[in-house]
Length: 346
Ligand code: TXA
Ligand code: MG
Image (cartoon, rainbow, N blue to C red; front, side):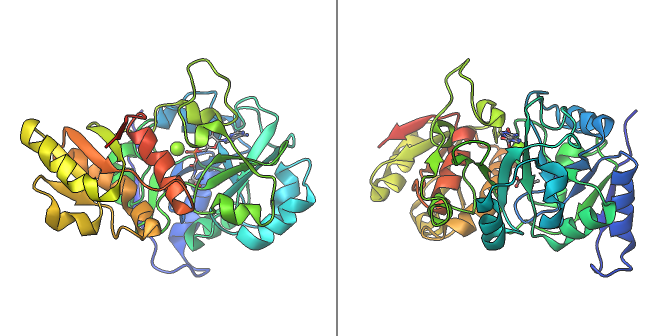
């Protein structure tokens, strides 16, 4: 049966906010609700309820072997879901929680195997978004939430993008305005040697201040070869893909506008995905991610821009390749996947 999806507006985050109680009640009775977080919108359900978690996989069309992140409202809940908690977790939590860092640890039996896709680990995160925190607190259970998009399409960073993907698939969407970070959390595995599985706003440089021996998983900057076992199952799937064909252009920054303009003269439907500084130089339709040096601003806009390019009828998109350090690494990781690793040297 198709659900009637309600769009819920939050007026205040105070105790009397009925919308937050309504969202928490949906979670407690095993339903699905999309909630804002500081990174992207999440498609939330009770992480301890196997039927509710199964409904997440169905609503998103997500492969069953891709585990979910479990969201808590307080670090005091960690022993409920994680069996072993190394000392470094306390230091990481002090510095980065609540915030866009997910940590993978050995799991307890409270987390059913459908949530962890059969792994004996659990990915845990404490979001900083006040609405997310308050809904999780009121629900009183750990909350599983993958990004609230259809599997394969760009993650959603506004309630209207969420509605476009999930209308009729969730009971409600809580509108918390645009997400400020805009790309999903950093995923760090501490279930063995410290390993970065997905880059995000908590950068490898910042993590190395606490974990000097942090390694980057190959999937951070390259495409896993078919059939190879990957540490983070999500990284092997097609991701963030708009309908248009995206190419990343890597090379001296000043070459970008001329290269794209020349291409646009030969090919129909070419768009540039560029920076503010490029806009006056472009002679084809162009969408800007933001100021060239402001990678945080670009990350906040990335998924929205990918959706805009489709809405505007782009067929081929030539995007500026970001740097592979700091916040740029998170941008690069998402853009390279959106481009199915079509990276051209110019
Ligand atoms: O910012 C975020 O993390 C958002 C918001 C909603 O919190 N959530 C999110 O979830 O991005 P999702 O499901 O789209 O991405 C979770 C990633 C996937 O790549 C998954 O494979 C990986 O984390 N993951 C989850 N549990 C894991 C585990 N136990 N071991 C390895 N990778 C895991
Ligand atoms: Mg996702």
